[in-house]
Length: 176
Picture 1 (cartoon, rainbow, N blue to C red):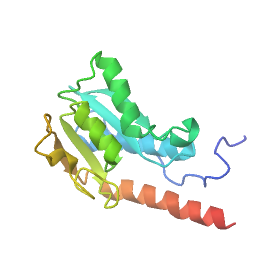
Picture 2 (cartoon, rainbow, N blue to C red):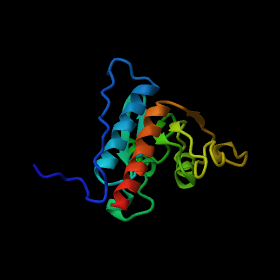
Picture 3 (spheres, helix red, strand yellow):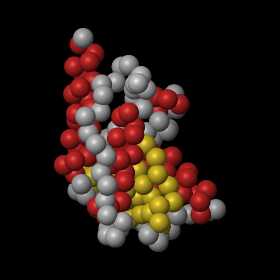
Picture 4 (tube, rainbow, N blue to C red):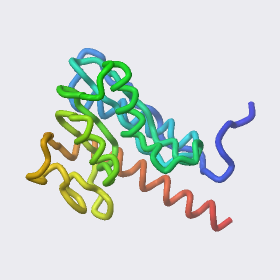
């Protein structure tokens, strides 16, 4: 059987997680975002995944697609927000929660505020580009007309290891 893995990307050594449907807590939804990140890796994308939940149901889920679409805005969060807005028939996602495997960048942080997402959960902080507590805190600007709650550290170790392994293995591949 021939692999569909892009040649410039090392095979993903991580397996998907299968959370219990009985306990739909923050860890449950972050595990689904983690699974999206694994799909991203297998598609040759930076492994970041996002899931949007509203009233216990997933209304948006995707992973980075920047490389496959050649679109710098095709981040997991943006794609999931677009799906969620279509699902709701409204760009206002009040009451929705976003789960993402890495702290959102400036663009994605701004999009979560513009979409009026109520709560963002991210796995690990990005001290260089994260804008919900890492490099800056867009959500704490007093001028914003929408304020969201932010929680970090949900499934932090697993998500950080996935992202770090991707770049470490990619560096090894590029030296061959």
